[in-house]
Image (cartoon, rainbow, N blue to C red; front, side, top):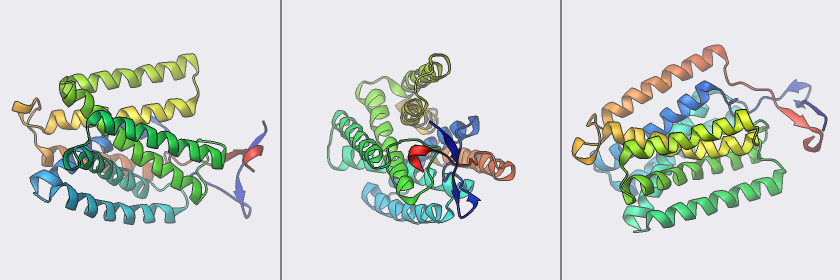
Amino acid sequence: MRQHLAERGGAPVFNRVPKVTVSFWLIKLLAVTVGETAADYLAVNLGYGLSTTTWFMSAVLAIALALQFAQKRYVPWAYWLAVVLISVVGTLITDNMVDNLDIALQSSTIFFSMVLAITFGFWFAVERTLSIHTIFTTRRETFYWLAILFTFSLGTAAGDLVSEYFGLGYLITGIIFAAIVAAIAIAYYLFKIDGILAFWLAYILTRPVGASLGDLLSQPTEYGGLGLGTVVTSWIFLGTIAAIVLYMTLTSEGRELVVKADSEA
């Protein structure tokens, strides 16, 4: 199948989401850790409660996504701001289902698995691709961010299911999911499994890795954590995220020209 660079009005078209690099996975892991600790800090430590915190952070996320959509290309600060906030909201949605609506972790895990599968199904039916390398229209970007939201909610539910319901604790849960992610990486590099499938599986499963890390660092020692607290943990990871985003901005790392196949032209 012949491929070519996408062009609009004679100008090259840039992907609206970043190229997948080592920095991408590092900052994604940091972002999901912040999502876990920041959600706990706002809802529990500040005493706003799950419902109020969820509505407020959803409004902030809507503003961040509006800024992201307005860029029409990958801009590190806008993209990663949206990722951090969607990580917080995704965590809060799952926590609301479990704590406020008394929905079992098994049920919420199954529910978000189905919703994510439906999202991918509609995305492919409409666009004939799930590629993260050709997010160059508003419709594709909308599908992309919906999928991202549901991966965070699913990852939160799955991680809590293993660590809390099955009682394995934060450290063991993190190790289990990290091992699965490593297996996916091996399958991609050595056995050449489909790259898009490998990406989305890894994206889902890095969520419980990051959440387990956040809980391990922030939770009190009597609950199996190291007792750093949500404030210290959140600021450490936010500072690291800011440093990597600055590096990406200065080096243009992650910027990617869209390459379309003839079937997408």
